[in-house]
Length: 243
Image 1 (cartoon, helix red, strand yellow):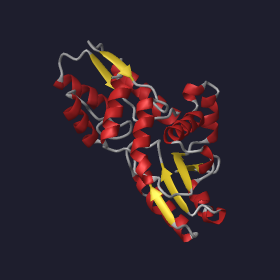
Image 2: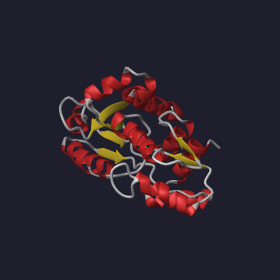
Image 3: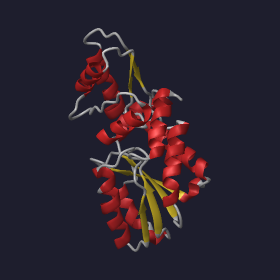
Image 4: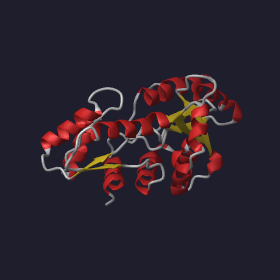
């Protein structure tokens, strides 16, 4: 994460601080660091890295930022970037980054973090701006449109579930069925994770790969997250600043 901030600073000549919703450095410390570095701040742009809205990530982050920011008066404005699941810069970066990995496969799997079904149902009733499933499917659709991939050649799976009443189908339960269905060469991409972590590097690249290959799979391609790629740096700038 710190590398991402460093690259943005170097290439765009602006101060960037990393903050964790749960962990260190925290949000309050990030504000203090910016104020110390830039006494004449006129606006702080907060960019939650989650492309898709969820109550447990996006909303709690916004709530915590507001709680911290409005404890004291500030001389600068606060701008919070909305979920960017359908932003052209995000879709373009994702497509450009992923395309080299998608050669010679039978099925492209989109993998997302699962959520409790009741939490998702409460959110979608509020509208598309809160609808996790709608948003991730829209990311999939726009990605496929960009690369001229027919949706029938794709599959949606969920990972990291903590119970049975979570969004399905589950990655670890279904991936081993693919070879018997004739899908022996697959690529798996996780657009909900702009930075690789244990859930991509272990759950997908190690665990799911092992399940798939043991079931008779021939080729398993893990598409890395955008991470610190040039296209992601440029996309962040366009999403946050708009130029």
